Amino acid sequence: METIRRQLFLCFSLFFASTVALFSSPVGSERESYSASLLSRYISYESITGNEREAGMYLAGLAREKGLYVEVLTDDVDSYNFTASLYPLELEKPNIILLNHIDVVPPGDTSFWEHPPFSGKITDGYVWGRGAIDNKGMGIMQLLALSEFAAKASQIDYPYNVTMLSVSGEETGGHKGARIITEEYLELLQPLVLFGEGGAGLPGVLAGDPDRKVFGISVAHKRTLWLKLTIESATSGHGAVPPDAYAIQDKINALNNLYGRKKGIYFSDTTYEMFRKLGKLEKGLRGFALRNIRFFKPLVMPAIRNEKLVYSLVTNTITVTSFNTPEGPPNQIPQGATAILDCRLLPGIETDDFIRKIERIMDNDEITIEIINEGVMAHPSPVNEQYSKMEKAIKDVFPSSGVIPVIMPASNDNNFFRAKGVPSYGILPAYLEMELLESIHNVNERIPVDMLDRGTDVYMSLIRQFLYN
Image (cartoon, rainbow, N blue to C red):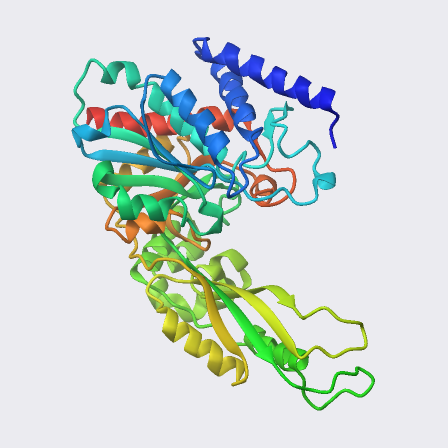
């Protein structure tokens, strides 16, 4: 635990840095330290899901300082959602939405962090802390990019509005944020297209050119299905005389059946387009096979199965995230057991069909299945002119990079908007080494300061295309 003196010193230091930044006019190289100071302060608000309000108020306050029109849509401790726009929403202009989320996951064991997870420490060219990548860094990029157009928007009647939408509860399914927005405020927003979180720039994607940066813009996301499996069995209770069958053993056997199942592989139009674009970037025979994967599937399937990330894009996944029994002494056989499954379903996979398949594989009628959380079903977004604007924006800032449409193996808020017919594209416009990507939801999360600056430039290029083309 930090001492009170250290806490006060940190608060005053961050407050001073933020205040100086707010009244400065950052240009050129100064903008890097400016964006870092804003993110540092933002990280210092411990906005673990359910406690977003204070952090949201800070970000909304920055937007007002920048001359943006702020509208608070919900104002609760566990559901603070707001917009920051070039024009008032009441004008009902077609709207380009820049989506981010305020909440973060818990830091875990803080003793493993090199710097305290909510310190916002700026050192060695990085901003450290929970949310630096997921997703506060992106919120700062969007805010700074949007604010560059605020003064001109007061003088010019642009054909579109551009709005930053900051929401709560993304990390636990979006029910306190994106779901509320899409059910109650979509007409107010008038969304033409949405750009939220999703892919990023990755190293080592191309076998023929591993140093080339490749950015994946997500046009579809797998959806979440969280299941609770329960079994109860009235068996003898002493571990010294184990019965032929009892709850824990039966549950383990059923889970082993799931683990050993043969995963079905599903190719869709989106998947084929992803591999085709990747094949255009790749060289040689591998590139040719990827471009024509419809005809070469038998040849490339072994390679796909060996690549965990790629394999997850063409299969439904099941992960056991919890296994529990009632409390008792070591020599007592529990008469019940529960397990939690985190399932991620490809677009088009129906929940009922998937659960029936799980039941067949487990082969145990005593196990009951309860749905804890279910993501919305949504069709992929088209690779169209709006997608191409983001592709161009990335290449404006990262000229030699490749860009491909992807399906994301994780779920996020974009699907709520896709389900309402809003084209939605996911990208963190930054190039991140694997070590940094692996820090998401892990210890030592951090983002390079220069990527805050370059990500801001990507959003500026994107906005400029909509407003001036």
